Length: 182
Image 1: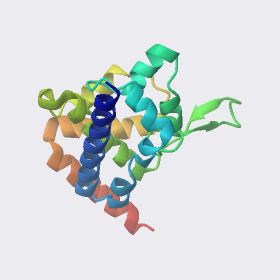
Image 2: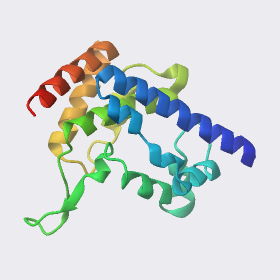
Image 3: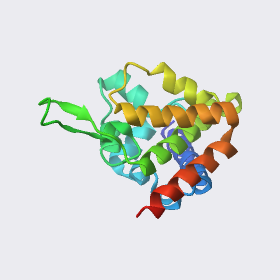
């Protein structure tokens, strides 16, 4: 069982990372694709992934069911800027931890990550509406900056309505404008 979980988890991580890399390349954010999710190979994340591997959903979900929290997720979100959960900080105005607006390059990587995750777990049941449906299910429960959420939802709707080619074309254009401004 442990050997099966090891290779099952490794295969899932490699497949997902490869898919995100391809999506990032198509979106014109090559560096983000090359650096995506390298922390998943750290002992904290990888060993937990093997232990809680199931194949049809993130092992972090099972770890939460068993332990009440996911040590792997806490490690992951603290090291990967493409997760909105990374972008929180203490607000001098409110005196509370508040969500912070994500830079666009990480929003684009988050989009690529969500599309790849949907493809990885949905497999043959995937369609271009799946990432949007998953996002909308979480509305009202996320601790995310409103501008960040609007941009991500816009990209997911563009994918659902016009497909990958148009979504990646849009991101490339926006990224080109962003990088040409300096």
